[in-house]
Image (cartoon, rainbow, N blue to C red):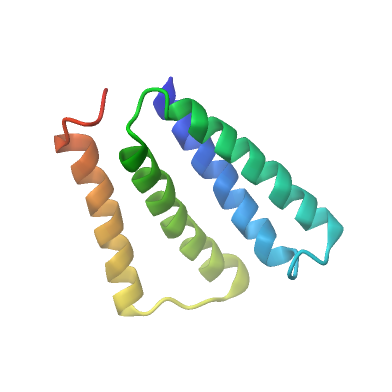
Amino acid sequence: MHWLYLGVAIVFETIGTTALKASDGMTRAGPALVVIMSYTLSFWLLALVLRVVPVGVAYAIWAGLGICLIAGIGWVLFGQRLDGPAIAGMVLIIAGIIIINLFSASVRH
């Protein structure tokens, strides 16, 4: 169940960060409210995950996937271009997450 919680936490973090961009520096009430609600839910779920998964592993997965998802959303929704080094870095982040999940004894399955 903790992996499901982590996945949903990542989704809420991604929603919150997308709304943060749309909030225009927290000056627009609707998106600002979405930011607060999304981050609150994301951190709550992450806290539940930390009961089972080591903090370093959980945070690496949460932050790493969040970075990659937000970069993709920025590209699609906000027209923010990604150059080769940015894409290569994100591929390495995803490779790191895969390595952690497949080979680390720190991860409980």
